[in-house]
Structure formats: C-alpha cells, structure tokens
Length: 193
Figure 1 (cartoon, rainbow, N blue to C red):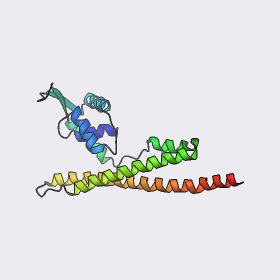
Figure 2 (figure 1 turned 135 degrees about the horizontal axis):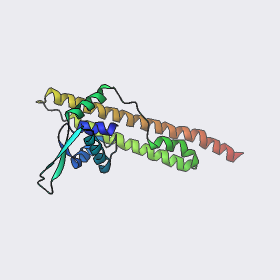
Figure 3 (figure 1 turned 90 degrees about the horizontal axis):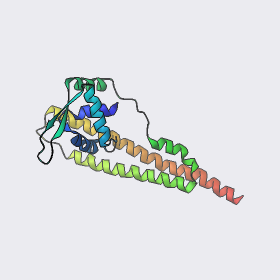
Figure 4 (figure 1 turned 60 degrees about the horizontal axis):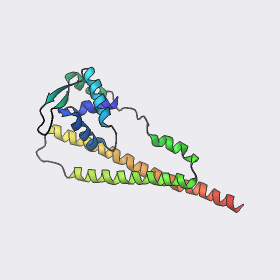
C-alpha cells in the first residue's frame, strides 16, 4: 500500500513514469526500492481506482510520453493515509531472516557476512551524512512557507534514515564483538581440551 501513497505524493506535480523512477531513486534510494515495472503497475492500479490520471504529451527528445497527475480523489487518499498516523514498521527485510540462518555457516563465513553488513551500514551513514551536509547548504532566503515545510520534512526523513543507519552500524559492530567473544573463546577452549 505504501508504494501507492508514495506515488500519489510524488504526483503533486505531473510526471512521467520515467520521471517518477528517477525521482524515486533520488529521494528514496536508501529507504525504499521500486523498479520501473513496479512503478508502472502501481500507476495502472491507481488509474483504475481513479486516483491518478494520465495524458500523452509531446516530448522534445523522442516519442510522446504519458504524464500522470494525482486526481482530487488521489489527493484525498494521500491525506487519509497521512492522517491515519505512522504506518507500523513491518520489518520485512531479508537481513532479519539472514541473521536467523547465519548459524548454518561456519563462524568465519558468518563473520564475513556481518562485516559486509557493517560496511553497508558505514557506506549508508557516509552517503546520508554527505546528503545532509548538502541539504544544510540549500536554504534559500526567498522560500515560501510551503517550501520551508517541504524542506523541514524532507530533512526529517533524511535524519530518521541516518539515525537508523547509525543504529545498524553500532548494532553490527557490537554483534561482531559478541560473536567473537562467545564463540572464538569457546572454540579455543574446545581445541585445548
């Protein structure tokens, strides 16, 4: 359901499916993944429900393209979704399942997995910190109140993503140390006996 609402929010301004995918990759790449076909299937569902409308427009660089916009009904649905409060965090991430099954691997391979997870978290922290630093420099003195609110909540989303990435980084660092302490020590004791 959230992908539908994300697209409804993005269609405040008319956009083609290609533009939506590009926007999605720029804004959500660290928080949500959607490929081009998912975006088009979702647009089709939204259109069938009367939440978006599309029209063909002439393109300066190629064939005509279809541009979509949220309808009044679509904007009302987005407001309804937002007014329902935060979506409960469904922890549907493959890494949770991978952690459960890591015991299937030898210790060295499990540690390699955790080190790769830590590296991913470090890269995400580094990237999001760079984005946050760039966002701090973007303030324009002539912004409207609406522009300032958009910027405020964009930064809030970025800050939440950064906090989660830092928490993952810390969690994995501690997990690696605990694994080494519990299992390398036990392995050493087992070999000495």
